[in-house]
Amino acid sequence: WAEWTHTGRLESTAESRILTIDAEQMLKCLSSSEFAALVVEYAVQFHKHILNSRPPFFQYPSDLAIPGADYAELVCTMSRPAQQLIGREALEHLSAWEVAAYARLEDEVIEGRSVLVVNSQGSVRRAMSLVALRLVSPEGDLLVQVGSF
Image (tube, rainbow, N blue to C red; front, side, top):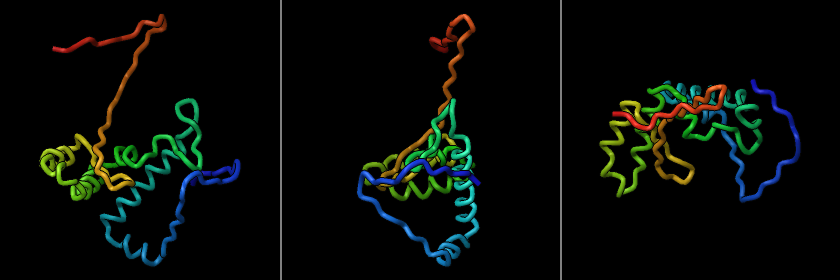
């Protein structure tokens, strides 16, 4: 579990909504093994981000933000089958002008080259993992690759 310390009062700066969940209905929804596994994997990744959000690499998590725990970022840390399931669902939300890219995006999702998610506004977003490495010697020299042939 993650220990949480109360450090102040909650105040909304925008219109807010409270979500209530009927436990019995939630259990019915989770009866699908594919969906239940997806929820568990998402929860595990979210929990890891809560526990790993601390200096020197991140700020401590708050009620408003957990560094690296944006929905798309979390999906990028999930297994390929989970990413494919989420991506296939996102493909169904493409707008009319995006449908032309459907086959290419579907191939990227299946091959694991990109992740598609539906954001809170209902738009499909494409996420890709990117690794950036900065190597600096003790003398301050920076390793740089100018090009490749």
